[in-house]
Length: 598
Image (tube, rainbow, N blue to C red; front, top):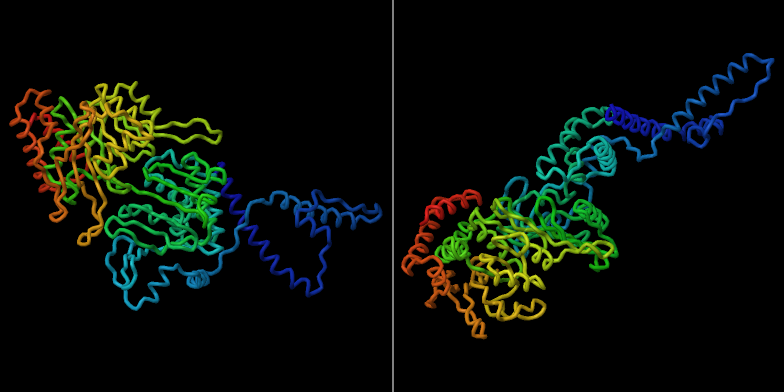
């Protein structure tokens, strides 16, 4: 009943707003005809008089008394209507659809749309869903074009009213429904109900979908950039300011500009504030930075002035719905099947002695993706605790505890650093610890764990070579004593390379072992090195120390360990030929291989 009452009030409000607009339009004509309206009645209509006053009438005039009573009742009715008048925003009457289309056509077009219109030649290089990607000769970046709904002022007013009704009538808390599509479907269904039950809005049924999608984008989506967020082919969405194209990093075509633009800085800030509320944060002048994770796993970074001089910015890093497996990396040429089998052997450790490994590389080189792939080799029998600054890992593990750092609150309290979380993880009886990005004091705690029996630990670090990794770990701000490097077995180097033949590629360029620590001369020995001419990761002639460690812990001969390595390589090549896709299917097959004891 409450929902029906509110909907009825909403319809009355719209109807009353239209009547008042019509009265306002007729008022000049009445003035021209010389019609006079009593000041008291005008005040009553405007809601200025709280209570009508009855006029004293002489007792000797009964007809006048009756007339005064009728006038008082009419005035009282006007006052009652004025008292129940909503203080909320009125919804103006929609103009004819032809006028809306005409106004849309006359609206200012985006920079990309103008360039495409004036281009003498343009080539459609790919089309999927509603997306079109063009290349224009002489332009350094491709153009990403997607249909953009730009409501008129009248349509925005209706959208705001429907959004207000939906906010009151939909009892569900949006972000308690973790599945994005399910959340959208719930809101779409309720908004369509509101539209069907509101004929007084005079919205044609063919326009229901437009208004429903517009309301959903504003309530549970990302506004104007919503079509970009749902495109799984995009890796990064970059808003750099108002009246500038939104830049995108496409998984296939890399950097490109889009036809989507924000018309004002306020629109960007409103979107940032909406995102901040969803994650329980606040962005203002005193705290102009936001680094957070959305419920769908996307990583969001936002800035507002004074942090950024020319206005607000927003960067959204999207992660694949289906994470890469080591099979995908082999097919992409990131590493060879031989190196992949060796890393599988290191993570698995033949069930006896897993290796402790660090993945090094620059920003965007694929460290987190490789970490995900290696973690898929961890047996289901083990307990894993992961610690990240911003949770990005998507591990196919059953016994997995995720921990995430948190910045201090508005009062400067409540901060959870990676170091604190890493220390706490040691009290959780983990079989393995995974640190998303080693940067500060947590390095000492992690290496303490490596030297106290926590084998098979993984982490990422920013460095460009094995020796640089050693220097960074042992220097401020990490300050790990050199003697503690004895717990580290393998360093993997990965780079993002701009190849003149293949474009931007990600490659593991080196795999090295750490040695000489107990002799007080820590050094690295490269056991795999990339050949840039062949674009292949090849085995070097340096003996692998870790294979000898496996022999000591398993009792197997050198021949048996190498044979196991070879069998894993053949098995991975077989899975490549079979076209195995999906992390769950891949993990099941590799676990079955390990359980067979091969």
